[in-house]
Image (cartoon, rainbow, N blue to C red; front, side, top):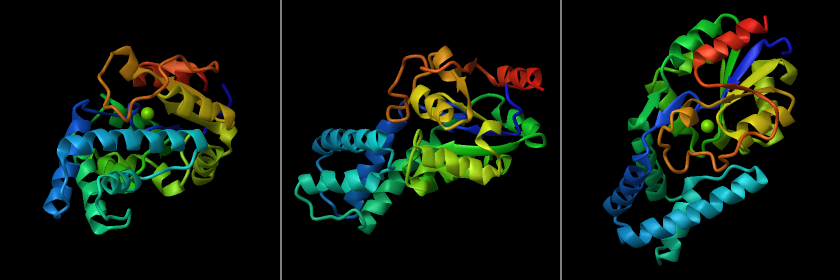
Length: 251
Ligand SMILES: [Mg+2]
């Protein structure tokens, strides 16, 4: 392995997991928030249409690499149900916060993650690079799990405007870590966004299969769409002991 001086990490299903039930709870909170703001919503019709429109937006974002945001598909769903709302309306912003509160309360750290980050912090520059539409929610989750201080830099696609595997986000990570891409190890669970993305942009990918190896149920929407193995040769780790051994062996 090349001389590694910095390590980047994906967030969901790499450092933390979210209960599989969180998505249903999130949509219920979203509906409750809209109704409490006086927006009439038929829960069943809303749920079905919201899911379909969200999938369209997310697939488009995955295709062109530009990040999207929940406010667009929530407002589009309501418009199609006859409501006069705009993505910028305050009721939509409140509904987005209500939605993500369910993820905040149902997130958990993968065992030994904090100890691993603290152990590596003195020896490597550490960065987080997450595909997440609503950056304030990702930052709240990191704060809540006391992970924020473990990193030298936090990059969220919702703030960057682009998402992995787009070259812009990996360039932003390298710039933020003040490290050449060739000296960065990038650890993530998604074969396309993380492994192929890192590889195509000159970083060294490490495929994290903790969740996959243990068949841990994943929250829909956060699960990788691609269940095959990565296209590129890469190191595979199943827990943080494997990562520490990999780094020790490359010294
Ligand atoms: Mg992930």
